[in-house]
Length: 88
Image (cartoon, rainbow, N blue to C red; front, side, top):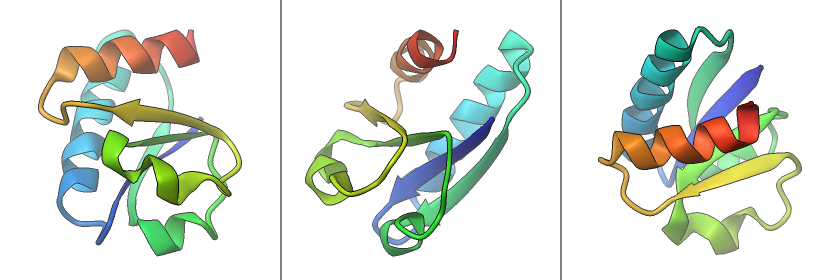
C-alpha cells in the first residue's frame, strides 16, 4: 500500500502524520510505504491513500484515490480509527 501524507509545504504536519501512520502500520502489522509531500507534488503522485488535515479538503478535489481528513493532527487515536476504517 502506497500512502502519502500531505501539507502545504511538505515538511510540518505531513511529517508528523507520516510518523503517526508509520507507527500505526507497525503496531497493526500492515505493510505499507509512507511518503510525506507538499500539496503541489501530491497532485502528480499516485497513491492508494492520502492522509491530510481537514483544512486542506478544498485543495484535493482533483486528487484520485482515497483520502482521510484528520481534524486533530496530534490525536493518534483519530488517525488510527480513520485509517483502519479504510484499510481493514
